[in-house]
Length: 253
Image (cartoon, rainbow, N blue to C red; front, side, top):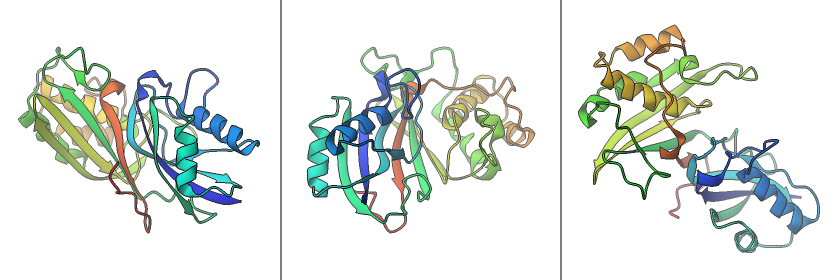
């Protein structure tokens, strides 16, 4: 039995997220069903993380075990010939049998796209916030308050299976280009809804003209019920990179 690591991208618009669920179309289900057809046995697929419904991925990673004579390039071709149009397999490589796409990852990067003007053509891929008053400069002042290691309980959906809610945000940047703001956040791990709540909270802090340092209190108080904490819509969120030690996960698409 061999273990393979694949890199894939997907348009999350018509998916109910990455993870298998009782109801709804998921990326994991599609991959496992296709691999089961290829192998004639059930194949479990483990992703680097679980993206929510309507969240996109430019570079998601997943591993699976497969007994095959196919080369890695043949696996890519076999998968791409079967996946629907909103999924693309970018690459495949063989890894050690104990490698985990989830637990071996040392960082994840997400981008959140905000349109300053509404566009019907990008409504599934970026979010316009007509009811929020903010500027790139006001958003930029919020970002440093999230850096470092913190308990992000206030910015995550409760999960009884988690041992702790501590994460290390290594960088949080803002780019502005062609009428669009892109927030780029990298951390060692992310909790459920964490990026969307961080983005939404930045917007609400700006809209209410609160001082950015209030973010420090929101983190310390661990209170998700604060009226400054807001979960931004999923359509603007993209998983853009996952990094692994000793594995080339930066090759362009």
